[in-house]
Image 1 (cartoon, rainbow, N blue to C red):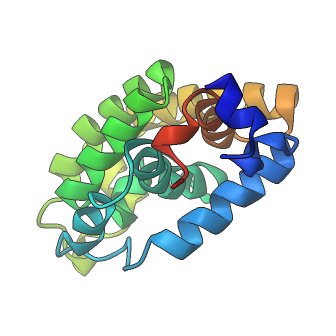
Image 2: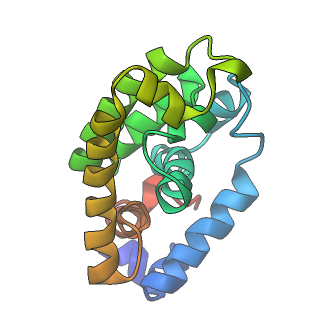
Image 3: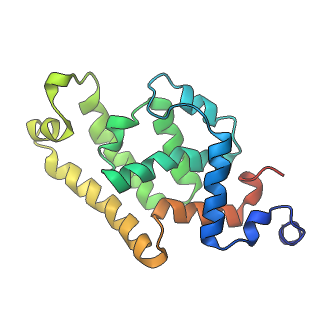
Length: 179
């Protein structure tokens, strides 16, 4: 593989980490279509057409957005489609994000049953958690996920998910970039 990198098969690998991350984002933008918020499974179905590494990145992108803007528990209020949840769990494992995968699993086990069949009258996630006396459980799961993300951000300036993307792409470019 070193010969391939040196011969220019994967020119993105010659970039620094920020450049490589930009290249990954551009590749995802060009290759991924659909609405991740949809509940019909079409977005997750579209991800199946991607190489394994790129699929993992596309599936975990939305979790990164949730960690940045909200929380891992509320992620399921926006991205609770079963196919996307499965793709995200697989993506976390593929990217080697074991601790974050554990947080994801715990959040899914807590939130999915609470959100199934939820109506506007049921209130928001915080009200549902309060009503079920589960707010502290959710806070602990969120704290664990944020701690992982913040520690990586302090070390690298990137989220734990995007840092894993960069590492994975350097280790397995054939699973990310088309030749």
